[in-house]
Amino acid sequence: MSNHGGKRPGSGRKAIEIDLHTVEKLNALHCTDPEIAACVGVSARTYRERKKNKDFAEVVSRGRAKGKISVRRAQVRLLEAGNATMAIWLGKRWLDQKDKTQGMEQPGPRVSVWRLSMKSLRARSRAQKLAKLVANPEMFAAHSLRLDLRPKQQDILRSLESQPRVSVQACPASGQTFLAAAAVLWYLARYQDIIVLTTAPTWLQVETVLWNEIRKIVAGSGITFPKPNATSLHLGNRRYAIGLSPDQGSSLQGHDAENLLLIVDEASGVSPGIWEAVEGIPARALQLGGVMMPAPTMPNRVINTE
Image (cartoon, rainbow, N blue to C red; front, side, top):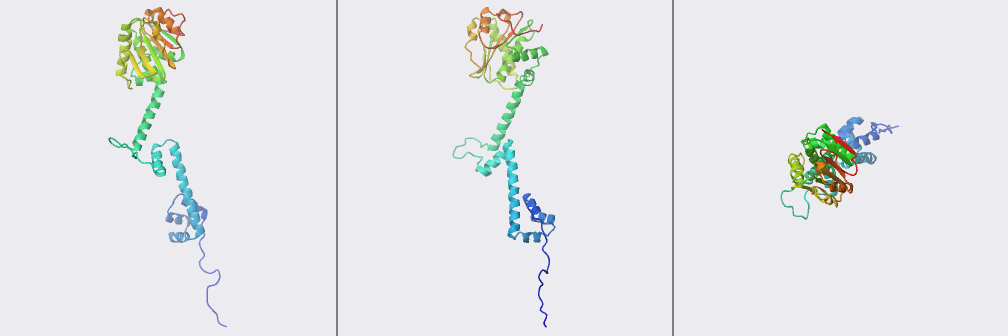
């Protein structure tokens, strides 16, 4: 009886088992073939041969797809967090956006979208810092106007926020006009819709005392204001300060804004008509000078700096 040779069933080298779950996870991390092979305990050649198998190839493909989705998710999170660089990159990749505006003539040097976006972010950052400063009169005076206010002067400015009428009784040359000028600029910076009205016993005092002080502070300010005129400073149609004649109380009326501030310098010397007008307008008032003014209604707070 002849004995025929041949391969017995089940004989030969066994195929090495590879954990498909591990393969999928490593592909999601976009590891290289040699890295994955070393991790699952096979040679790089064996791993590449296994990738020719349909089921194995699907595991690899699924892992790679999950990895890309994870990256996209992270990029979108950066975009939603306000990352300008990521916003520009995704705009170019996904929306085919360009740095140059197509179909429009661009005079002068070209400015990239990235530079414009960074400029916008810096401007917004400056605006946020300024908003924090103007909410605090002491900080605004020190950091923005570059003024050194005494504690009593700081107290007066804070009182303007909580009291509709503030009267300051002080002796001459006590810095009250300097304080009034600081209050004018603080209110113009603090509110978008604001009108500040200023007056004094004589027109000469309106023009050469208080407004001269305003012009000096603006010239040395750390933030940029428009150049004041003789007795006015305009930041917009409903955002300005103006000096008014002391002869007619009616000049104080007819000014419409969400916020109104009236500043009366040397209050003890103004005409009674001014006080009648003050009581008829919904404005906060800062009254500075010597003795108590003859107003029909007492102010909410009297501060003595003598």
